[in-house]
Length: 238
Figure 1 (tube, rainbow, N blue to C red):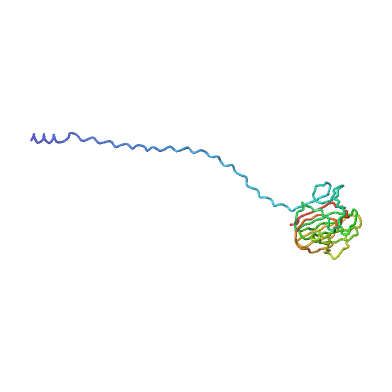
Figure 2 (spheres, rainbow, N blue to C red):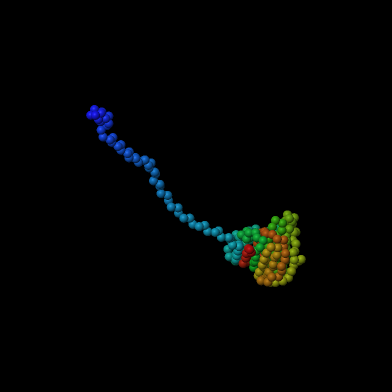
């Protein structure tokens, strides 16, 4: 029995095997991230203001100075007035115009002026250029004889002696004008195809014209005619 026990003891290892240590997990290296660069705080922009709608054109001229507002071959601004004419003699009846370039071209407007006779033959009068378009020129005429008229002038006759006047009132009319060299105020109001005519503050005639727009201003009707103008007013109507 002793031999058997010894043999068994020799075949068995002495002591239990030592346990292996559990490996400690290693930290996974985290790649470094770039530090973000701070951005500038955007500067607040001003709220855009609405663009104002341009108001109606209003022009007043007392002719205290020559501002070049009226284009005219023979216009003189002096002593607080505009004098148109006389002109060099021509064999033509084409009217002599002083156009208000700043007044533009509108269908609806109000225009007035103080005016008086200076000298010369006033056969066709002088006054307000109501409209000049491509075909016709419309003219409100006053005279020193206390009669007035409204003409259409056919521009196609300008190269044929200018005999293109046509009265839109059926002839010269009497009413409201002061005689001789006294000052008269002429006023026209255009709205669509309707024109009202006032002399010295009193509406004396309403008439229909072909609707349209064109240049406006002042005029005299003969190369001999000289007339004065003051306190011009133009106002666009909306």
